[in-house]
Image (cartoon, rainbow, N blue to C red):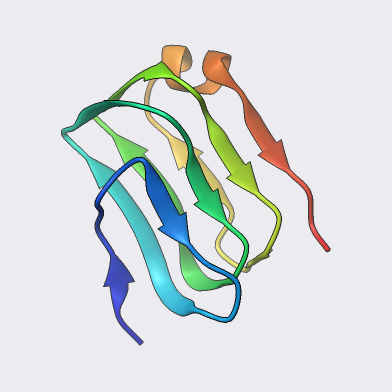
Amino acid sequence: MPEYNGPFPGGVAAGSAFSAVNVHHTTFSGNVTNSGTISGGGIVVTSSTFLSGGIIDSGIDSGGIKVDRWDVAARGIHDRMS
């Protein structure tokens, strides 16, 4: 299963499956989204800046959400498991 590495804003659409979503070394406005399936790698945000938006996880995410900076988390993480 492939990893999703962008573009951002964006993410995993319904009906799609990835092993992880990697947001690395990027700055953008908008959301990282998941309405599909992410296996064990989860959503990982490192060295990135969200100018607006946040993480919206309404799909299946077996690996959880990991962020390395408080300002990313402060923008909003919405985990709505369905």
